[in-house]
Length: 177
Image 1 (cartoon, rainbow, N blue to C red):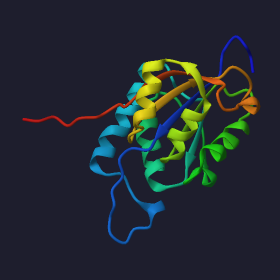
Image 2 (cartoon, helix red, strand yellow):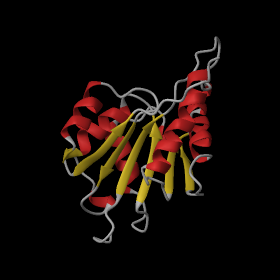
Image 3 (cartoon, rainbow, N blue to C red):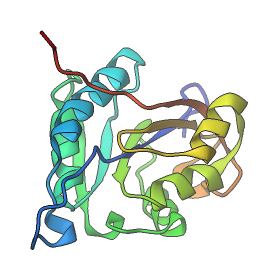
Image 4 (cartoon, one colour):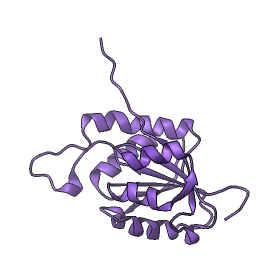
């Protein structure tokens, strides 16, 4: 990786999903709140200048729907990989996926599920914003976004090596009369 532009890993938990009767876990859609919050996460990424050039997204319906609503807010067309290995993945499995990222990629968005997304953030962070880290440690709710800055190459990613630059929980809203 070029030292002039540090690599960033953005970890996003999918937006709030519904629990319809008889629907397999992998096919659960977003709930109304999720359909409001996912665009808010996209707006937050855009405003924070955290637009990915590669997206690694679980194949679950709720993560794919989250990405679709996030993407509509970005003014960009990053490469998207719908990755079956990201579904219900552990932190170590998610790190292994990220280690496969080509070195030319500078900002990668990983969209996944609890507890893997929180665990991967907490395992990778070795410094950074202490207040943000405390919030990420306490709770990693739906639509939460963690931005990690990496010191080396994707292949060198290891526990305790990243800095947490930001942690946010963007929420959408509906107008009331």
